[in-house]
Image (cartoon, rainbow, N blue to C red; front, side, top):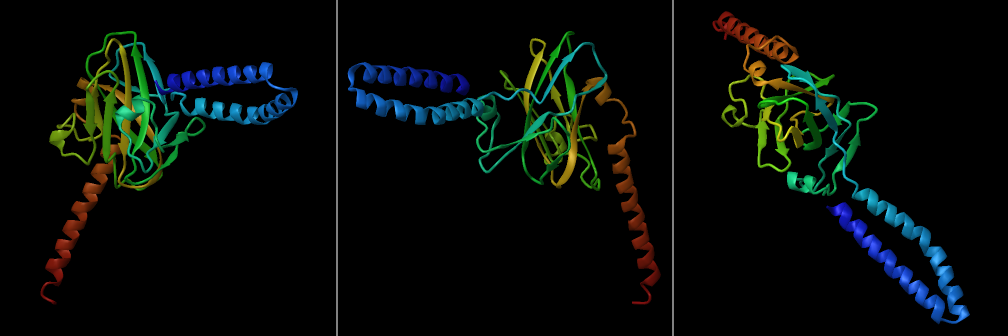
Length: 265
């Protein structure tokens, strides 16, 4: 909406400037005509530059992921993100982004490499579009990260999704207790519920992490039957089991040392 409004303003401005110049050209002395022509030649490049910048500033962002689903699925990986928005000092809302108001957010281009530096406790936004050739029931979107950092934080601190033309939102992440997540009985806390409306889904998604790291955001579409099935051993569950095992081993080691040296103290 902002793009068309600015384009309309520029069109009216062009019309008024043209009218004023033509009026002065036909009804003013020759010397004044030369002055006006000189000023016009000096200001025209600047005006064209500003007009181009204004149009670029209000060009809507294409979806970071655009996928057409051909068949029903149990699990389907989404393509890599093409970009993300790093929220600036001015907080963003889904209403802002659907209205193309990006405020002071920084656009990070991921077209050449999907890996970027995700800062701790910063909000990152991106838009996805899904269309389907088949009728789909409610399903989930699972979010993962892939990168070279110690897996203390296995998943995301905060995951929120906002659907266009709908009041439906998704919520998950370690920030929220299990009772407030879309799938409270699932170990992986970064899965949100979603559903296509008229075979189309357009969503803005917000992700936050508690630890900084260079990483790639990965997403999978998963059927509810897949989500609710027994958990398979993967990077997430493997890391979780490794850390829990290490904690149990350290506990018994500390207990052994306490019993061994308690008489010496």
